[in-house]
Image (cartoon, rainbow, N blue to C red):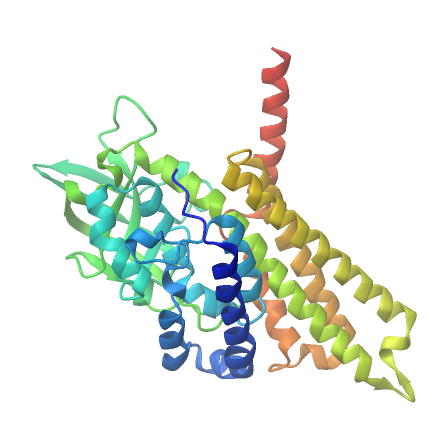
Length: 391
């Protein structure tokens, strides 16, 4: 898979500073508005588009900023500091959906879609997950069959991020009849307004208000060969696995950003809240909880940066991303839990930042492959490597 171009350090420093200011001065003060309204306000969406955030990981030749993964994770750690719905709004454009096109699309497909995706004019949605086929695409039941010079897609997807606002679905389907070679999983570019595409109502979720997901059903949706990513059916499985591996590093970085926010909220509260005449931060057990939070954040940040370097260099694009995703998403859950504990009863109250963080980060252990799937990838990969070396 091709990687995005590297942006000069001084240019990237400016991008990062702008994003940090945008997150902390514009978005953080409106987190309750986002949560209660279950939507990102239009003015914030417009500003994000003007800053290029819908295409920060899309190559410059297609209208994006062109950040590579080492820079992407630095941005993600800033974006994780606020409501995760903000990042979700443009996350699929830069991540699992957009990277399928960047890495595996034909030149014609890239020219047709990437400039609009980078500008935010089109929201690309990654349609892989189905009932019975979530972290493991081998269970796909959505089918694509040849009919003359077209493909006809039938099936249903669930929990599809940005489905209610998508302009393009990157759809994974099993080719029927099964081909002689490969695993038979192909990926198609399906416009949201194509005949036979049906989008369900927005899911009611535990957290991440403002990040919309929904079911998507394909009833005899007909597309041409120009919709088949890469022009070959066997591209699908590799495109899914490659995009998910890259996405896992991004999600790990996002988790670190959320953990940093939970830590900052905890320290600020502990330094000012009192029990009787004592500031609770003077209590050793509170200090111990803060110490555990800090250790998790620092370890996660170092791991994410190291993993991103290994991914960009090609040294490890399989095991390391799963390690980072597993550790950081489990870590942020523990840090958020400690943040609620430090806040006491107040931490359980709606509109307190740590309560929202606690709910928001729970999803990070599920998408881009559950923690259990990451453990299988890591353990199986290490054992498999040792067996090959032994033979």
